[in-house]
Image (cartoon, rainbow, N blue to C red):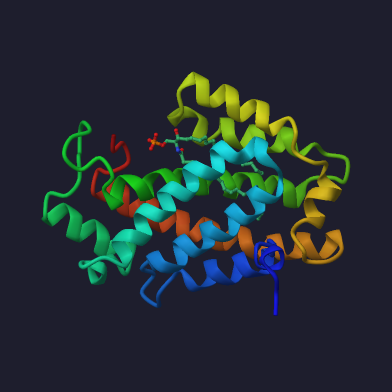
Length: 216
Ligand SMILES: CCCCCCCC/C=C\CCCCCCCC(=O)N[C@@H](COP(=O)(O)O)[C@H](O)/C=C/CCCCCCCCCCCCC
């Protein structure tokens, strides 16, 4: 039986499988698999050391908010992102313009992870197409500057930038993914990036249609 250390070990294949399960036949996004994908990614983040603790803590907090809805008395309304949006909007459960009585709605919580998914897509695509001596810190901050950073205040941007500086080099980074030699990791990233991108695009379109992209 695997010990606690073993259970916490990151595996890219596992994350890939989870994101594969995210989309239903009619392209709805299953919340359960979406948060499971994030849980897997947080395992990876935790393996990089305590300097990433503040990021991991925020991600876990948001995952837990969504899991609480998923397992709560109205859990059946939270099966997909589409049903969650419909339910929360129809029941006025979302603070639309300023934070009020629903500061932790499913919609605003998921939006934060959704924005981070775009960062992930950009970062993994850079990682996939980079050369052996490319710097992960540079790829990470470029991806961050093109996506998430515009939603973060100066102090968070500064802390994130400092954390990126201690990321391991590309070879060590690929090794932690527990896939095998670098070529195999690159091949798996070639499968993972389009999947992540599709989940991102579907959510983005839904949020855009409902005017939810700037939830406070
Ligand atoms: C396939 C494996 C390779 C890549 C593995 C990457 C692993 C990444 C795992 C988790 C990513 C963390 C997701 C962070 C969600 C952030 C949500 C957010 O924007 N929260 C802010 C706003 O929230 P509210 O205040 O409005 O509730 C919050 O202020 C943020 C606080 C923490 C700082 C977030 C910085 C995010 C940087 C991007 C992640 C860098 C990870 C680098 C590891 C390679």
